[in-house]
Amino acid sequence: IGGHPDPKRKDIRPKGVARVIAVGSGKGGVGKSTVSVNLAVALARAGQRVGILDADFYGPSQPRMLGVTGRPGQSPDGRIMPPQAHGLKMMSLGLMVDEKQAVVWRGPMLMGAVQQMLADVDWGELDVLIIDLPPGTGDVQLTLGQQKVLDGAVIVSTPQDVALIDARKAIDMFEKLKVPVMGLVENMSLYICPQCGHEAHLFGHGGVGLEAERLGAPLLAQIPIDLETRLGGDAGTPIAAGETAAAQIYADLAQKLL
Ligand code: ADP
Image 1 (cartoon, rainbow, N blue to C red):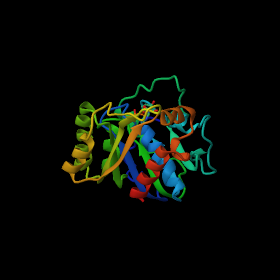
Image 2 (cartoon, rainbow, N blue to C red):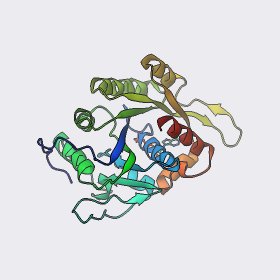
Image 3 (tube, rainbow, N blue to C red):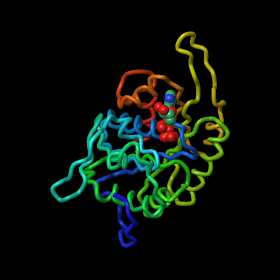
C-alpha cells in the first residue's frame, strides 16, 4: 500500500457499493473517527451491509476502535480481504503499518493509498461504505471528490468556535467539489454529570445548529460527552453496539441517513 497514484486509474469507486458517505471534520480531535465507527455500526444494526474505510492516514484509529489486529488476508484473485468486526467490513492503513510507526508521506503517497484501499480491497456487495476522512481539506478529500467517489458527506464539529471555523472550510470544500453535504453532527455538545445530572456546555452551545441553518443542511445529531463512548472506543467495542442512550442517538442518526 502507498506509492504514487496511477493517473490512468480513473474509476476507483468499488463496483458493488451502492452508497459512499464520507465523514469529515475541519479539525482533528472533534470525534470524527468515533462518529464514523458508531454510525457504521448503527447502520449495520439497521440491516444495512456496511463497510468502513479508515482514510485518516496520519492517525488511523479504526483498528483500535473496532478491536481489529493482524494483517488482512488475500482473496483468491489477489485482492485484499477486509477483516470483519461488529458486523462491518473494515480497512485501515493501521493494519498495514506498525501502530507506533509514523506515516511520513507526501500527498501523492496518500492518494495512491486511498486508490488502493478502494479499488484493491474486495469490498463485495455493500449498501453503504463509510469513509473516515483525515481532518481538514487535503489531498485525500480532493482525490475522493474529483474522482467522483463520494455520494455525500457528513461533517462533525464540536460547538467550539475554533472547530466551527475549520468545519466551515471543510463544508466549503465539499461544495466546491460538488459533494452534497448531508448534514452536520455536533459532538461533545453537552456534559451531563453522571452523579448529579448537572448539564454543562463545555465547548459552547448552539453553534453547529446555527451553521446548519446557514447552510440549509440538517443538524443530524447532538452527541453528549460520554465516558462510555470514550472507553468503548479505546476497548474496540463501539458504544453503538450496546443499548445505552448514546447507542440510541447513533441509531437515530443512522435512520436519518438510510
Ligand atoms: P477525531 O477522529 O476527530 O480526531 P476521535 O474520534 O479520535 O476524533 O476522538 C478523539 C477522542 O475523543 C477519543 O479519545 C474519543 O474516544 C473521544 N471522544 C469522541 N467523541 C466523544 C464523546 N462524545 N464522548 C466522549 N469522548 C469522545
